[in-house]
Image (cartoon, rainbow, N blue to C red):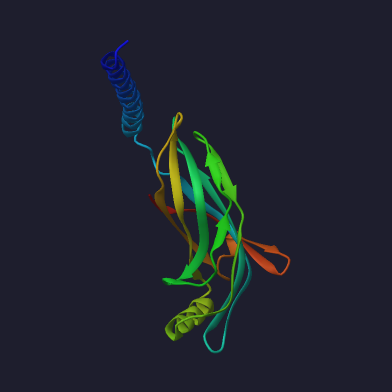
Length: 208
């Protein structure tokens, strides 16, 4: 066999390899496109969150404008989708008062939520001697005197959608749950030792 024939066979082999590679890439792209199309047709619905209750162990303002809080919440999430699962990645839960964060973020465990499935978390959130603005200190004192304090429990994190074997990229999840607590919430309050447990069952606002 001449050198010319060998070179011709090598060129044919390279062409065959390129065609096989192009066919494989095209097949992968087609599968991904089909999965993406199914994902877009199904149109995933964002999860529903409910703040079920909050048990207040401490909620005290001290001079000069330092707030100490310690409470446990029960937070429920439901996946409303029939054919789409949800991965919850790195969820932080914390509390705010009139726009200012008053607790440290508490990291929730990573969770996969199947179709129509429920997940319940019961984390503690707390802040020790957190500085607050003077006007917030005054407002909190007034709210406590009035008997009702509005706290917002918030969740910040990332979610991914799962359709079959396809898993999407990460999407930003924001959850905001208003919680009214205080002495005037007598009908929804249970004494737990020295703490007070408020039965809230409050729907949360969810953005994805």
